[in-house]
Length: 89
Image 1 (cartoon, rainbow, N blue to C red):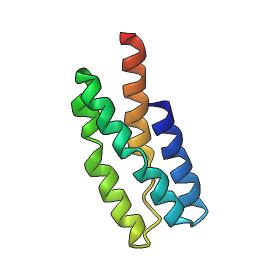
Image 2: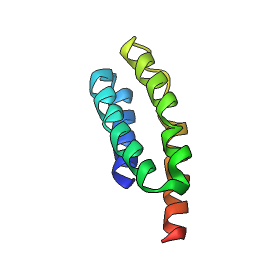
Image 3: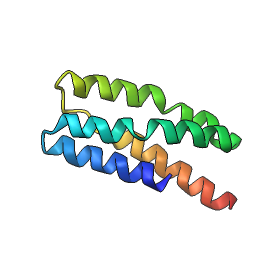
Image 4: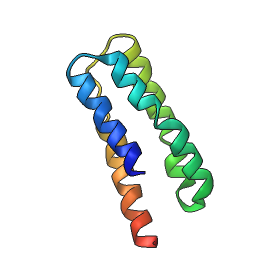
């Protein structure tokens, strides 16, 4: 989960530099691990898999050249999930 958060941070860094192609690669890279973690941690499945639509929407905007949207909401949700997973451990 922390890797997914780090990749979302990197995506934003590339977005801020105007490199939407690299930003998209980093953001796209978190989808598989999030889905897989959702399958492995039933308590977080809905939250994790619920991030797919916002990620896809953001990727579409970036691929269309709109660099204004950031990963802030996605990162916030990931931080919440990480805290909940740490509490449960």
